[in-house]
Length: 146
Image 1 (cartoon, rainbow, N blue to C red):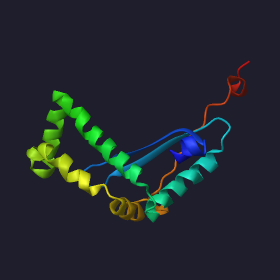
Image 2 (image 1 turned 30 degrees about the vertical axis):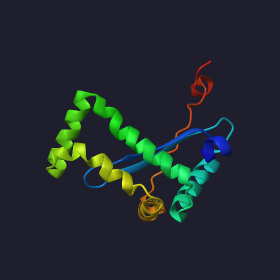
Image 3 (image 1 turned 90 degrees about the vertical axis):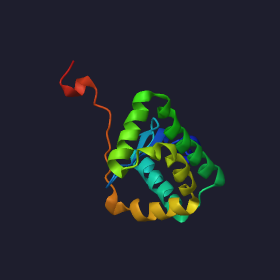
Image 4 (image 1 turned 30 degrees about the horizontal axis):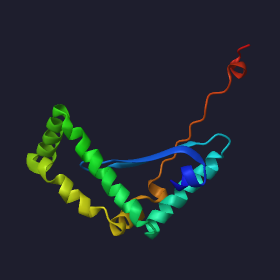
């Protein structure tokens, strides 16, 4: 929110945790606002990561993360295919297809300031980072057009 609404460096920013059995991936995507420096945006993202590591997370941000995690877990359960897929994953990965009934309540207490700080310090480090910057294509005149 600080990067988009506060500092206006990006038009949007999002983060996803791709959780799998074994190694996972935490993915941050940001689209720079017009006339903003991509380098400054990248640095602002790193600053936000450092904020997570310091534990300086507001209570409302924790509550928002819990609500978002709850929605992301519950929403797909309204579709039979999604429920079946999740039951299958729990059966294959954990030998516990019934986790579909208890997983949400097991996950929610884990979203705490301390756990966020611990995980950020352990995994969100420069040595684990891959940065890809994409820029718009140049105008067609520069490609040999008219």
